[in-house]
Length: 111
Image (cartoon, rainbow, N blue to C red):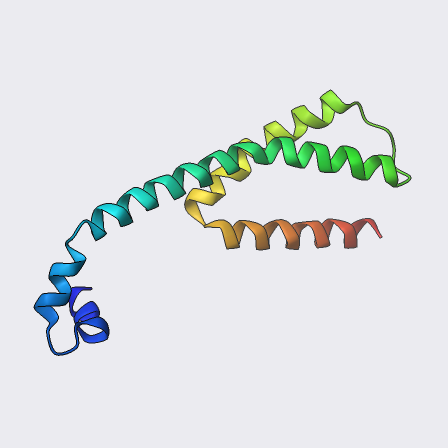
């Protein structure tokens, strides 16, 4: 990584560029990453409430069989515990892709 930084930003004086980067740059980077991870974690924790609200709103606008809001919330929280584990193992993009694919497959089977 240091070699890449030297090549891209070091110019003719890579030692000088490294000294500039040691002026609390890495501290700033690590603190910002830690803050970003906390924000990401907080956002993940809000997904069940978002999903519950989205389902309730969708079911009110579409001709669907009525479900009790607490039942929807319980089902979402229960499913989310398993789905959330996929974030750690597969990543966000893979989780999103899997949800889209499963939704389309379920829709196709019901049609």
